Image (cartoon, rainbow over all chains, first blue to last red):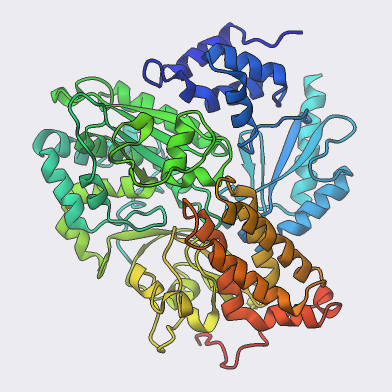
Length: 167
Length: 450
């Protein structure tokens, strides 16, 4: 199977590259990797990184070194929903440790792991800029804030419902 | 109480949209700047205002602008630093999420003053929905003639581009940000040369924080001199403080920098006091990188004078007995918080975020984290405290960028002010696993207002 952008994604790719001066298309690398990751199942296999390199006319190593540096890029498969829970100072002070432990218990996974049904991945991340609304996590584009054990249960149920509704 | 220069209209329904923003007086300052003012006079107003960089370093913005080189035929760039990743800080997010056009107006005026035809907003990757809000606002502004070619018939072209990062605290440092904008790993560059001479793609570049650029709008509207009348000393204008931790009302507050720290924590207008009836133990007033202060040194300086929420007062006493305004990320810890655990959590953050270029930072952050973990888990030795002190001392000042210092300062401050808490962990291995050190070590009672 070969990973490639479809027409819609190529249009977005061209829009991203157009932000930068002629010959500086390498600047689009970070946004393009987001585009690739979002559309290739939430992670970046080597094949995807090589593809991005060819599109931007740079060497694969230039993509590998960026993909391994920035924490938002997943280099291993992830579940449908990635729970990125903040564990930094201000969240810790507001009780994030308890929430993390609770999520681990409810989903029966360790940080970095994915549930057996492929639904949820738990990823511990650093400060997300929501310290006043702690404890919290990011799922996809949105921040789920003011977490309590009840809220966590409700969120897990909500995503399960979403998948059921889609099928 | 207190003038609101930035957040005045934040609660007006629909203020995020161009139509409402324009109706409420938006883009009036931009029109004034582009049509009635010269570039020199705009820079002069910013200098007169005394505006200091609101990202954390507090460097005078007007002075930074005046450094930009203007070689013939070389494009210049303004870059907006929206990488906000300093733990405790979430004020830029608030500004961009609710007042995107305020930022755009500030960017337009600043781009005009600096001669930047292509201005970039480097926004942290995690603020994905905020990037969407900014893109929408840019489309609206362009449609209404405020961005694009020949703006207001002045002959000035300007496009604002949103560029998303992908998760790296270090990219908040201006040279690492530039490297990241060029599509590379966020490794800071050695300065000099400064970005004003050789920045983005080696072109003259000015990097400013979101709040700094938003403040340009009220400065142009009211004039630099009027802006400088608000506040005190070299802390002019207003500051956004993002308050969090164990307080009743966490959130973003715009303050006049003449209020006292005590007022800020206990008044209902701001933090509303410590939550759950607990007592104040400590506070990190400016984002995790600045020294933590115990309650008795937070509310009053070492000389016994009231401490105020401004640059000079928060720095009173240097690092021996003071702290810094920093980014304005105000983190409050109550009596149940463990200072050792807090320091460990922050050390882990810096170790994770170190780019790895400089040996003292790359090795030192990991080493400090391991030692703090030992102490926190009840396996520490007395010599560990002095070892920690030694490591942080060897990182500070020996790195290309300030992340090394930022990693060292919290450890230094924790040991300096809470050494007995560390010793208690080491001497009471089992007890420290189940109990709290609390407020034991204060010789003077902590002042709680009546």
